[in-house]
Length: 101
Image 1 (cartoon, rainbow, N blue to C red):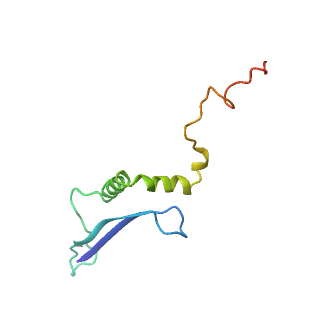
Image 2 (cartoon, one colour):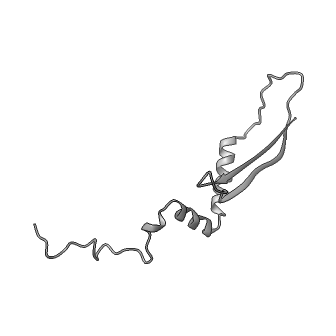
Image 3 (cartoon, one colour):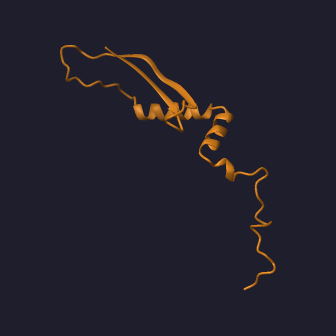
């Protein structure tokens, strides 16, 4: 038997603790015949990549808003975000009336 445990973590810096961690699988027993070490494990109708994608999507969907705020701040995007957002009809986005072609 093999004992399978797996988790997914959201980390933005390898020198700091991860922002979010979710346990995907815990103590899943997979049979493996002792007499034939070349036997491959086959589980019908199961895709590990699809399963992990679903787990990550569920984790991200349930992630608290403050975690996404931390991510935006950690990546440096926050400095470009204004509240309220900028108006394209006002300076510096509007064309200067004193300039003409």
